[in-house]
Amino acid sequence: MAGALLHTDGLHRCPWPGKDDAFYVAYHDDEWGVPEYDDRALYEKLMLDGFQAGLSWITILRKRENFRKAFDGFEPAKIARYDARKKAKLMEDAGIVRNKLKIEGAVLSARAYLDAMEKGPGFSALLWDYLDGKPQVNKFRDTKDVPAETELSRTISKDLAKRGFKFVGPTIVYAFMQAVGMVNDHLVKCHCHELVGKMKKRK
Image (cartoon, rainbow, N blue to C red):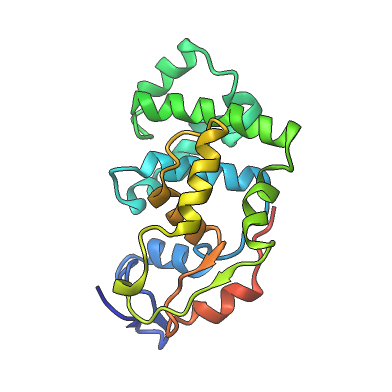
């Protein structure tokens, strides 16, 4: 539990990436909390959060490129068609998290994603409509004040699960919401708190 940390570049940052891991600090500065509206990018992040369950996020982040190669660039239309042979091949890939339930969950979630795209409002709209398309800006000063889940994450979790998505418990959903900028949980003193509201990820 801590407040924002002062780095050697003179900027304060959230404490969770630490000071010594440039890779993790760059993720904090350039990606985490920046509003993401692209359907496929949101699907990828939700899947990676599902693979994170029980592990640290930095572990998944370091394997992200391996995941992208193994899962065909996280193209839902391709993943939805994975057969037993492809799933078995993924279980042999040391570059990703080899978990049978999570791999199967990614396939089922891909099918749920396609269904939302074809029969519903689209995946991005499905998520962002809960917030009227605008991030919820929080003003936390210490990590102890940041919740692990919220009423909204529980509501979205139930909706996604009902639609067939897997590994979308309320804690995973809230971590996802933080990462894709649905909520701005950078600490108030962090230099990114104001910046992320002015940024939007590219497709």
